[in-house]
Length: 121
Image 1 (cartoon, rainbow, N blue to C red):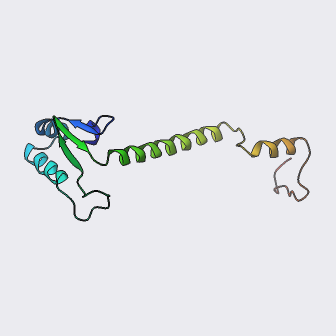
Image 2: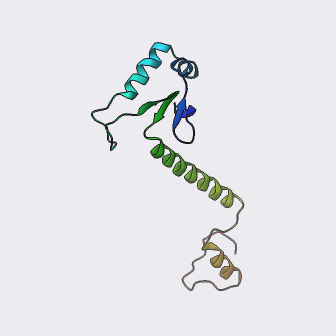
Image 3: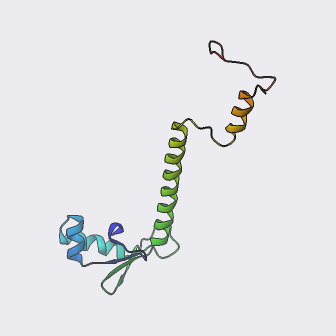
């Protein structure tokens, strides 16, 4: 159902259509949808624990906004990880490193600087 939802968290499909998309039997799909429609007594959500409600032509995912926010956060973290890896691979200094690299190149080195043994300067 998550893969079939629209931007508002609505899934327009029939039981048969869901079964076909999930590649499971109609009976298994009816059982799963029935469970999602029932309240879950041990739910941590603020509502009664239902996952979906019926709407004309399909269902609405009740936790859609939370799922959407979590996906956005995960996508942003993955983007930043990829961006930083690419930036590091180019060999350019990261923010904060540029000034230190410039000072080192200009001969202004911290008085406590100890060169690494075996490395030419």
